[in-house]
Amino acid sequence: MGSTEKDIEAAPGRPVPSALALPASFKWGISTAAYQIEGAAAEDGRGPSIWDLYGRQKGRIANGDTGDVACDHYHRYREDVALMRRLGAQVYRFSVAWPRVLPQGRGRTNSLGLDFYDRLIDELLRNGIEPWLCLYHWDLPQALDDLGGWQNRDIALWFADYAALVARRYGDRVRHFATFNEPNVCTLFGYGMGWNAPGIADRRSFLQAAHHVNLAHGEAVRTLRATAPGALLGAIYNRQKCVPVSAAPQDAVAAGILDACWNRLYADPQCLADYPPELIDGLQEFVQAGDMARIAQPIDWFGLNHYCPIYARADQNPLGFAWADAPRDGPLTGVGWRIDPAAFRDELITAYRRYKLPIYVTENGYGANETLDASGGVNDVGRISYLHAYTKALEEAVATGTDVQGYYLWSLLDNFEWGSGYANRFGIVYVDYATQRRVPKASFEWFAELIRAQQGRHA
Ligand code: FCB
Image 1 (spheres, rainbow, N blue to C red):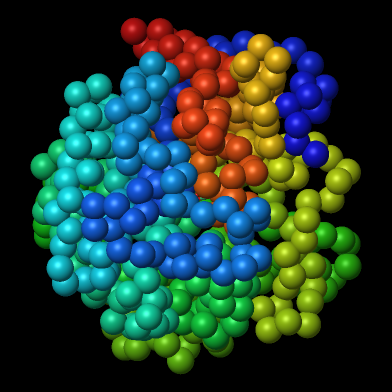
Image 2: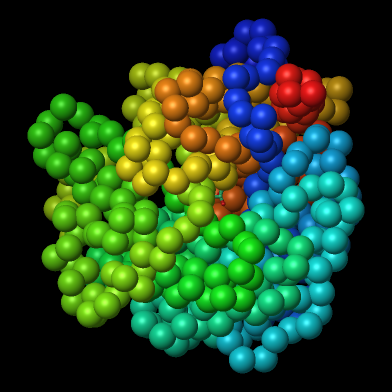
C-alpha cells in the first residue's frame, strides 16, 4: 500500500484550495521535531539521546535506520527556512533537542548547541516566521535514562531546570512555548508497549513515567512563567477517537481503556487536576500529597495533534487492551491509517468543550511510501485530498463555535519517522536522502495556495 500511483487512483481530481471561514487571526504553519530532521547527532558537543541508543539495538527500527544524519537540517536550516517562506508559513513549530543543549541532561550546558537554536530563531524572524518552541519531542538525554529516565521522580526538576535554561536564552524572541509533544506516545509506546525508546513494555513503568511527565509539565510551566513572563504557554496533546475493532462488548471496554491512556491521562490532570478513573488504581502508588496542584498549572493554549481514529481489541495483557490495525473496509492513507475527517472535527469540538482553551492544531498530515516520478516530482494527490478534507473538517468545527486558532501541518520535510525509519514519508517536500536534495511535492504548492487564498480573504 502507499505508492503515489495508488494515491492517484484513490483520488481523482485535485481539490482546488479556497479560503475557509476562519478567524482573521488564524495562523498557518509547519511542525517538525529535532531528532527527526536535525542529524548532526555527534556534532558540536551534542550528547546521546535515548533514540540514538535505541536505534542501535537490532530490530528496533525498520531497515536499521537511525537519526544520525536525518535531513541534515542542522546544516541546511537556512534552505529549510527559505522553503517555509516560499510556502507562506506564518509559524514554525520545532523542538529543541535537550541533549544538544545539556549533553548530560543537567549541569554543564553546551554553548555550541545553544548557538544553533539562536541561529535558527534569528533566521525565522528575519523571514517573518514566528518560532514556536517545544521542549520535549521524545529525545531524552541518555545520561538521564541511565538514572531511570521518566521513571525517576527527580526528572520533574531536571526538566524544569532545562525549561528555565531555554526560556532565559530564547525568551526574548520566542513567545510560544510548549512543554511536551504527545506525552501519550512517548510513555505508552516507550514504557508500556516497548515500541519506542527506551523500549520498555510494562504497565507499572508506563504509569510511573506518565505521572512524572505530568509533574514535569507542571514544574516547567511554573518555571517558564517566572523566567519568560510574557510568554504564552501550552502543551501538545495527541487526540484520536478510540474505536473497538469489533462489536464484542470486551472490545468496547478495551477501547475505553485505550481512550483513558491516549486521550485523557495527560490533558485531564494538566488542565482539570484529575486522573481518568480507569487508571487510578495503577497511578495511586506514585501520586504524593500536593502533586495534582503542582501538575495543574494554568496554560494558555491547547495544542492538538490528530491523524486518524485508532483501534483496540480486548487482551489479557496487563494494559487491558491490544492495539489493532485499522480495518481495511474504508479509506486508508499510504501508511494504512484510516481517513476520517469527521473524527477530526469531533475531536476538536470535544477537546474545546472539555478543556475550554483556544486550540492550535499542532500536527496533522498524511504518510505514504513515495518515490520521485518520471518527471522528477511527486504528484501526491492522496495527501492533497486528505489535507483538503481535514481543513474543511476544521472549518466545520469552527462553525460550531470551537475556538481553533491555527493549523500547523506535519510536516515540511520527509523525515525520520521513529520506528518506521525513513520508509514513511509525511513531508510536503520530498527528501532524497542520498543527496539531501529537497523537492517540493504537489501538496506543497497546494498548501501554499490555500494559505494565499486565506490571506486574500482577510486582506
Ligand atoms: C506524531 C509525532 C510526530 C510524527 C507524526 C507522524 O505522533 O508527534 O513526531 O511522527 O506522528
